[in-house]
Image (cartoon, rainbow, N blue to C red; front, side):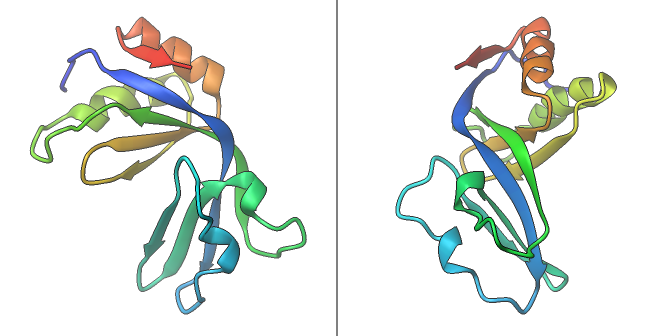
Amino acid sequence: MNNTPRTLTLLPESFAICRLAADSPIPAWAMPGKASFLAITLTHEELSIICPEHLVPADTDIPAFTGWRCLKLEGPIALDEPGVLAALVVPMAAVGISVFAEATYDTDYLLVNQIEKAIQSLEEMGHRVVQ
């Protein structure tokens, strides 16, 4: 694993991870003008949307897991640098923290369900978390 100390930034809001049918149109609420992080992924099986949870309409029947917090790995990180994500995620999984990872060209974003425990775990590994 890549044990280089990293800096991660905690994004300010809570996030929702939503699942829609693969043939669903992207809902208007998922395309705001400004969000600290928004990810839309389409596969043959599903349309996944990660967005600030306040954007998901309260009256929707879309399956959505809310309350996730997002840590941005400060980058850019080279696409061919091995072990970066594993070095962050494997130790958190070992202490019972669920991690949902999303990657961009420049970096990775880690959505976690236990933010205080995640921050403690990352700092114990020598990483820095900016709040």
